[in-house]
Length: 171
Image (tube, rainbow, N blue to C red):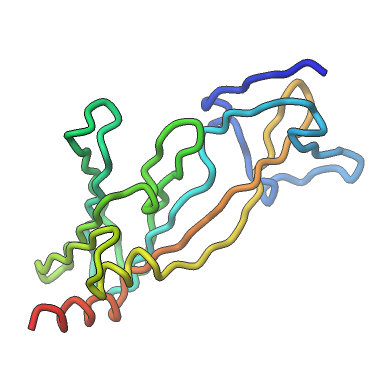
């Protein structure tokens, strides 16, 4: 069977199966059933949830893909009770929490909590290791056929326990 390579741009054309009302007679195929190899643009995403009473600013740091001696920072403001989505890389690197080196969390009172991947401090462990994971499926169209793509979703938390651990470590 003929093999296809679908580039990362295909992910942008995807739509979630939960949002799509498919007729019962429409078959959704796997890559194996269609005999295709897909280079997906993402393998899922991280959600970072702000469970604090005020807004927080999250700055994540990633290795620079063009220069191993540099890093790249991304900044996000998360309102109370809200979350952000950061895509996990697949075909190319992404910006998920799993791919970040550090996460700096600036609270509404001006305090700043630096969480470092691999650190032994309690607040870094809490941030990077305290997540819930679920799977979601998106459906994309390829040559008139529907193809399923399984995604990993990890939800990370900025919460009072994280702040308490950080405060205890400052004593």
